[in-house]
Image 1 (tube, rainbow, N blue to C red):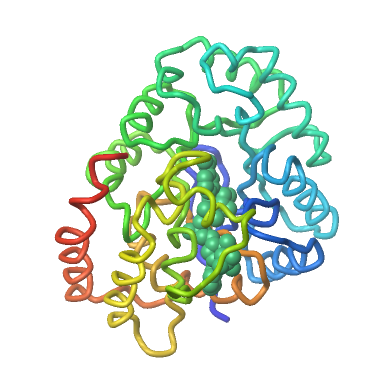
Image 2 (image 1 turned 135 degrees about the vertical axis):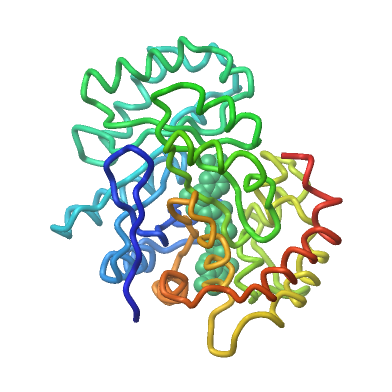
Length: 330
Ligand SMILES: NC(=O)c1ccc[n+]([C@@H]2O[C@H](COP(=O)([O-])OP(=O)(O)OC[C@H]3O[C@@H](n4cnc5c(N)ncnc54)[C@H](OP(=O)(O)O)[C@@H]3O)[C@@H](O)[C@H]2O)c1
């Protein structure tokens, strides 16, 4: 297993593994999970040099945060956890992001994570209007001053939200969907984020598993897996499932891309190598449930760069077959 690469997470002072860990799936909403297996995946990640984990208070209603607390208690090396707040609201509204609610959510995450301070708190895909409410960012500044959060950032659905968010000087990170099927963030946002030295967490790096190249037309997902119940955005933003692409089309495109993956290289690692080609990205946060998946994913860190001709082929595929369907939605 090669060496894991680290990059600065914006101005936070954290150096994070370029291949980090998305801890949604181990909480729930992705079919059945087994904590013993999840912990094995988490431990394997740490052994391989992964030092940054993305979670949220709502993932398994705290189950994911609690697993991360356990992971931290069993290691001595620094393990940074980014959590999120805002999705405990029954209905999303700007008013819901009040001082009182934020304090309650932070308190709960501190408890779940068994810590006195959160490394990074991200607002969890709040409504677009929130970015026009400077008072919320003022409240977050107060929590930093109080010492209960070290830094804060946002997780966004749309590029426009990301651009607006980084106008606030203390937004230290933006989490956004970026993968072979979602390329618009690279057009304008990445340059702006790099100019302001804002960290970028690329989520859905595998387009909900599609880009790992192991799904097929007859793959069955359980009823409690969002790949069954959110295919058309029935429960939350459509773009969060398969990156907003129709599943069958996604499989066709994956078959095309597979032709470019060098022999012996896991497609997941190759797909994330493509993401990391973009230096503005601090890390990818693939959602893994099993140690074997982690082992494949971390290989992205030390793969050779993708040759220019292959980058051009990827670009052509995106331009002709993906862009017309999704580019302007997010
Ligand atoms: N609103 C938000 O802020 C938000 C929304 C979505 C995600 N996120 C964060 O981003 C992270 C990543 O996004 P995501 O989990 O939605 O999507 P993803 O990383 O694109 O896909 C995750 C799925 O890919 C499969 N997978 C992972 N590694 C694999 C491998 N080596 N081989 C085969 N399959 C593999 C697993 O599915 P199976 O094994 O079940 O097939 C896994 O559940 C989340 O965990 C979460 O931390 C945040």
